[in-house]
Image (cartoon, rainbow, N blue to C red; front, side):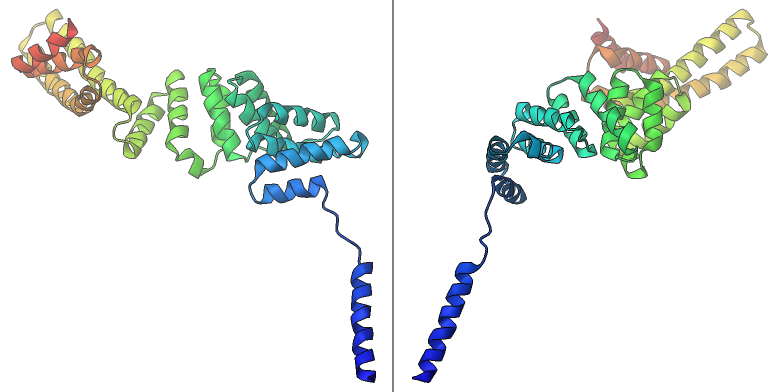
Length: 291
């Protein structure tokens, strides 16, 4: 009997302790962060909205508005994200990810000016070591012909970013605009190593060798025609061998370009080369595309 009373007392004590333990209340904010953790951004967005509706504005931290805005963007609601980001800024809150998300929104909206402002805010306030930001800045500066700024951004990118084809493309365009021929020569080869059908790199090498040969041909012919001596004729023959060598270097690139995009654009180069080679059939073939 005493044993039963003892067990009964122990059971009651456990029951009373469980009744007296504080209950953990689940708030909309907690729900929002829990939904975010599982990737359920739509439900998280609803929970954040509920939190803001039921909480005095004075009690809401700027960081909460910023976090909610990032969630809204992930849920596909850009308008709500911008609204909550505005609230975060009103409360003097900012972080790098907040402005990077804003930049992504403006990119979706094709608002280049606002996107650029957001990205530049990041580099001015949070450092220049964000390679994703730098890559996008490089693309924008290339697009708006801000070559000096593009080169400055390029210098801050790490080697892995500099090795990506997309970033190399932009750097190639910048150096073409600046007429940095030696740099472009090197970049064209790097790009073709990554992508043998890279159109701009193929064109660069094709035209580089073609015009080296064509300009040499015109220059040396002009010299010989001005003074037709045996000595100058022998010199001309040697120079024409170099012309042929340049045309032979250009030809593989032009053939690839022709295969990718046959037509008038490349026909003139090919017709002229085969005319120099004395191949009448191929000369006529490409001349037909020039009409």
